[in-house]
Amino acid sequence: MLGEVARLIQKARRGVVLTGAGISAESGVPTFRGKDGLWKQYRAEELATLEAFRADSKLVWEWYNWRRELIRKVHPNPGHYALVEFKSWFEDYTLITQNVDGLHRRAGLDDILELHGNIQLNICVECRLPDKAELDIDPDNIAQCKHCGGKLRPGVVWFGEMLPQAVLQKAFRKAEEADIFFSIGTSALVHPAASLPVLARQRGAKLVEINPDETPLTGLADYYFAARAGELLPRLVEVVSKEHKA
Ligand code: NAD
Ligand code: ZN
Image 1 (cartoon, rainbow, N blue to C red):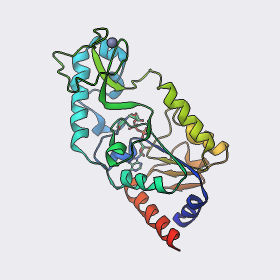
Image 2: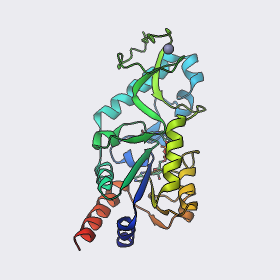
Image 3: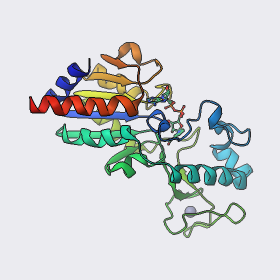
């Protein structure tokens, strides 16, 4: 099956990849769902919201500082690095991620569509302008926006918030135009991100899914690999480079 996908890759001009928390699981970043995603008995849904921040911004910042620490300590894994190799295969390559951990960037990709923002950035809770001066936030004395005095918050999309519209529109356009679309390490449950592979498939792209567990997308995929991304993607890179030489 890898050989077939490798041949499709060679024919394709426009390649699109969508990643979710699963691509970073092998780096040791906990996913939200599952027990190791818990922090002091709180669920992410209770902390990653505007309401939670308004009610107890100290608590929310303590949680984000813990997550930032975790992420700073981990490294991109072979899956992230393989997705950098993809760049040389297509005339037009787009990587869309739901992750906020910045690991694709640290692996060496710069032009990424980050649908949920980036956890290492701060923005103002009132006017939403980014603030580059203050990176580390003291939960007991939260830095304020230079423009309007609002509290700084992490530059991520919280539950119940809209996705950045310009980024999302570009992602939809790229999905529509794709010749081949890879859905990797995402449960494909959260829309609108989960609509991207469906749209790509409807517009004629070949759909490849990599996830140890089946998802609502699996039945639609042309190729489904029940595998860990950090193991399968380097194998795919190997097969594609062999085909290139042949
Ligand atoms: P998700 O809904 O994207 O689900 C994770 C998926 O990854 C699951 O389907 C799981 O089967 C799969 N998976 C697990 N290990 C894998 C592996 N080694 N290779 C390939 N697939 C693997 O993610 P979620 O944890 O439910 O979180 C939902 C949202 O929360 C994300 O979309 C993101 O915005 C945010 N989040 C981000 C991070 C991060 O930046 N790393 C971590 C947790 C949550
Ligand atoms: Zn402001």
